[in-house]
Length: 300
Image (cartoon, rainbow, N blue to C red; front, side, top):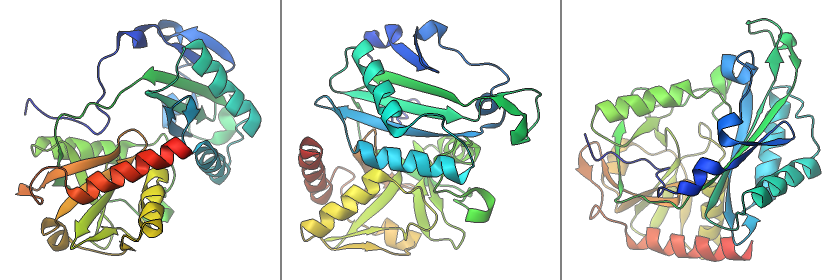
């Protein structure tokens, strides 16, 4: 398929060829920003990360993102080696170096650092952590509603790899994305361990049915910040919203479907498993929520 799009598709911006990358306290040109082949993130996917958007000179919901980052690091017994204030300072330094004020995206990554030998034991990571901040000029440019395909890959149980962790270990989601593309879709719709609709490989998932918003229980999905903001906006604005189990039957019969994520905010879904959802275009509820979210970001 030649017209596949992604939920992170952005307009081309030549300025990104010359961005400065923050690597362990130093700002480096993009071509020179590197980490060791012995780094635990490269070698084992041992690390956590956050994605953030810059609106009107401010990182949206920064406190929420930092709360999630530090909680995830604690969960995997990783010492970030920086205070919260120091992380904010590094973000500001990188933002200033790249002259960014809006339409920018940051990926803040923390790994366990450089290992002394190429094996998995965390005790072998004796030079660390490694902290990297990649910032890009990025204006979302998704030309049409997303097409999804249901895949056999699941969001699993917390005792395997807790899906609430924003970890560097993304192979399960990558395999799901590959399966969806092989099926002619843009991204994957993933079920939970009980067969209920859960999330996509990259974003959280919502449907609209008869004026109500439905999303998963949250037990098996990433604890998305944009997801929670949409739920909160619904409650504040009198829009019925339910965190519940629902099936593909409910999904195929939805009036609208959309995805949430830091990059694209609310991305409409036009087709799932070859079935057109609603009109196949962005619906009125998704449009309304986009407007409410823009107002929230502007006031944040």
